Amino acid sequence: MMYNASQLLDKINAYIAALGYKRPPVGLYEPVEYTLALGGKRIRPVLMLMAYNIYKEEVDDILSSASAIETYHNYTLLHDDLMDKADLRRGNPTVHRKWDENTAILSGDTMLVLAYQMMSQCAAPYLKEVMDIFNETALEIGEGQQYDMEFETRNDVTEAEYLEMIRLKTSVLLAASLQIGAVQGGASPEDARLLYDFGVQLGLAFQLQDDYLDVYGDPAIFGKKVGGDILCNKKTYMLINALQRADEGQRAELDRWIAAVDYVPEEKVRAVTALYDAIGIKEVCHRKIESYFQAAEACLDKVSVEESRKLELRNFALSLMGRKV
Figure 1 (cartoon, rainbow, N blue to C red):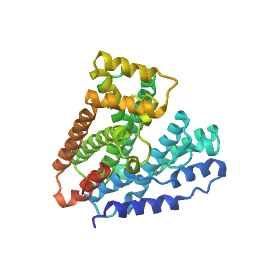
Figure 2: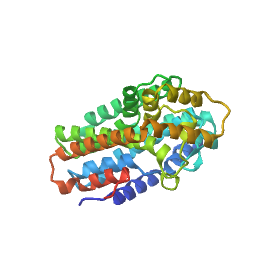
Figure 3: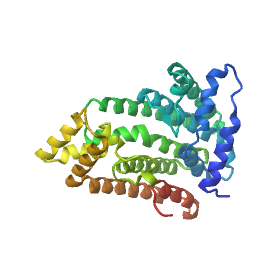
Figure 4: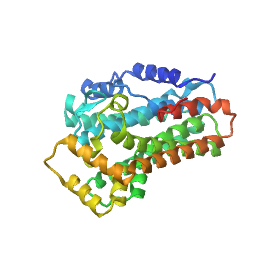
């Protein structure tokens, strides 16, 4: 049967909830269970299961791989929170706040090992290809995180550098999830690569939309206050393009707000947003999002199975972007 996203989400949630880490010491594994129990949209395992389901019916056969990708993703979030000194994750205390920094490091490292352990349980004929994809993706995500950290101290980050950073940090894990699902489903190499490329383009559109919504989103829908990226001078697509496209006066005003130490947060958000409006950044970002989403759809169009088998994946992509199904 063809499963929808809700059914696949139920499957992955039940599988993760039933894992249970009984090995001692409790102090090492309790933060792992806590992190995975925080939930989330489980986008990556759902994408993996959907890609597999295009070709095969028995999605239960790759729940271990799907759980591996979700465990790996949460490991990166746990360490990101530690590096960012974040207090909350999904409305709950981060691991380094609930326990301590050393626990976050060690439990995070353990999650990485557990992810590899689960991924290596895939069927033998696909093991090497799956692990090669997983290994390369893990390296790329680390590279993306390093670029992101380096960009914090640079004011000359280019659009191309930023797009490469978000490809590495965000897109490749979505893409690998799809490719690993397709490979285990018996997809042709061409289809598996098209689904990987679909994930890359979708991930770029998704991250740029996150940048966009941080400035122009409705807080009630977006789920958090707008302007967070502006307040911390994050090198987003919006800011990078504003700095590149601003005239002399606009650039001086942007630089003043970036350098400001003593300011009213709401005033900074309003002022920088007004500069974005004047420079035309809203339209620039919207066009880029649309171009990536159309590129993603073009990749999915080329996957050589009947349209009905791609429908759930197509609808899931639309829902991720907040578009009508």
